[in-house]
Length: 537
Ligand SMILES: Cc1cc2nc3c(=O)[nH]c(=O)nc-3n(C[C@H](O)[C@H](O)[C@H](O)COP(=O)(O)OP(=O)(O)OC[C@H]3O[C@@H](n4cnc5c(N)ncnc54)[C@H](O)[C@@H]3O)c2cc1C
Ligand SMILES: *[C@@H]1O[C@H](CO)[C@@H](O)[C@H](O)[C@H]1NC(C)=O
Ligand SMILES: *[C@@H]1O[C@H](CO)[C@@H](O)[C@H](O)[C@H]1NC(C)=O
Ligand SMILES: *[C@@H]1O[C@H](CO)[C@@H](O)[C@H](O)[C@H]1NC(C)=O
Ligand SMILES: *[C@@H]1O[C@H](CO)[C@@H](O)[C@H](O)[C@H]1NC(C)=O
Ligand SMILES: *[C@@H]1O[C@H](CO)[C@@H](O)[C@H](O)[C@H]1NC(C)=O
Image 1 (spheres, helix red, strand yellow):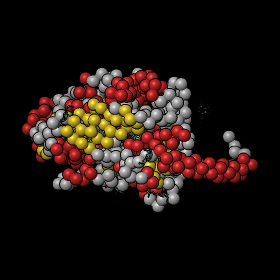
Image 2 (cartoon, protein in one colour):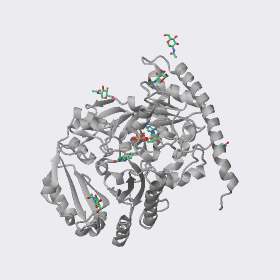
Image 3 (spheres, protein in one colour):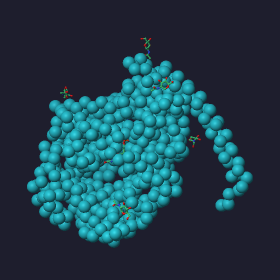
Image 4 (tube, protein in one colour):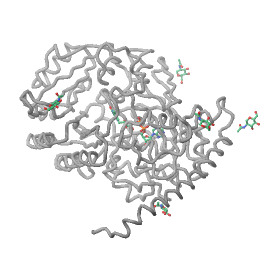
């Protein structure tokens, strides 16, 4: 279609008019919103003004940016919140919910800020961020093997605090210590212990949350349906989760890790192909994941495919070597590849810290590597991919502009296959050999760069269609991907529209999620581009 000259002259003018109008309305709304907060925040020991940031506060930008992990959502064009609230008390969350409803603001709840599509800090309507960074206490009850964890805590803080109390307890959650437990547990949450103990959401025994009416609920008062929904259905559709009670899991005093690198000169096609036949059938104490990426080859200027096999074994080297000899001799593992350590040291190892780092690096909320721009997608594999299929992936890695791309293959089986599909909303259980994370990142700013990388990963994803799960083509909600379908940008949706992405994340559990949503938030107040729809709205 040929653009018409008169409208292209007029449009900028109309847009700027529109913006000044919107700005004036929202400034007005936000004044009233602030007044409302002061009235409703109650008499907690700290005054609410200490936890409110608006653009006039000099620290507004640093508070906003502190937990942004994807620079795609930190550009001048990214919509910014009118207000950021960093509550110290539950009463301040209750006031924020009440006042947001009264003054027509949307809420974004942020824990660790690792959402792949920025949903915890970006919205396309006037909005406030409730950033839980100050609510992160952790209470470990060693006697009962449980812990209460406030949702502003990170995985690193959880692992560290458990290890302080006992080296024989751990928790089956993700590898990256700066991930927040608010988003991670409510979306599932897997790590190196998943084949032994399932995912984080499988190991939650109670929760405290605030609903749309501002009520503080626990498992008993929220009822089993809502408690079911927040363990894997994504927290953001149902309210603000304040704390989780988790069941700790047993870990031995000694675990073994290895990372072995095989590049194309050592024929990883056969190895990766073979890995697909063993990865989900191995002893459940054994987790071997594969990361595929492009690397420089030994020939000048040449490219190769590198396959990193990395492993956690819940036991010592000797047992691991004999297990590997039995089940995956093709990898050629030798004793020198392996290191014994404590489970808590293994969390540092998988997070990428050099050996010998003190454990308290787990407490840092600043990631090991600087945030960059990235796009990710996910798939589930139920039948081994033939060698020719794998070779097609390598070809795409040799294309220009894929320097920072990787595929991570995460093995299932073990405990994952024993838990029924409907136990919690996370449905990806028996029948899956492994999950794929596709990931591409870049450092250059600008739309053109961004589009180039995103279109590369989308082409790879469409190539993979033939080899992965079908009807639905399943996806993992914690690897948030707005390409698979969305509600409207403002969160408006219908059951039908939301089903396109909802059945990919939740399969048939989607219907029960809609049912729960309709019961607990019938006016669809808690909404975003991928929130569960309420039938009445
Ligand atoms: C570097 C990196 C490594 C990762 N590694 C893993 C991994 O090993 N395993 C894995 O399973 N996943 C992993 N992920 C994905 C991660 O699990 C998800 O991005 C997860 O949702 C992040 O949680 P968060 O609290 O940090 O995110 P946020 O961006 O704060 O929140 C994510 C979503 O949850 C909502 N939410 C957050 N807190 C609450 C709350 N208290 N109440 C209600 N809703 C809430 C937000 O509104 C948003 O919709 C990784 C992500 C990154 C960026
Ligand atoms: C706050 O404290 C004052 C005096 O102690 C009391 O009169 C008022 O009702 C309290 N307000 C709230 C919201 O609790
Ligand atoms: C932000 O600025 C307002 C107005 O000056 C002030 O009342 C508030 O205390 C400031 N917030 C913080 C967290 O300092
Ligand atoms: C263990 O749990 C029981 C029952 O909930 C409780 O009474 C007891 O106080 C707990 N133990 C500790 C050390 O908190
Ligand atoms: C790979 O090679 C390119 C160009 O040949 C070079 O710029 C780059 O630094 C190399 N990367 C690594 C990790 O060695
Ligand atoms: C959202 O849905 C309501 C009810 O269907 C409708 O009235 C409203 O116009 C919609 N808003 C947007 C932005 O689509």
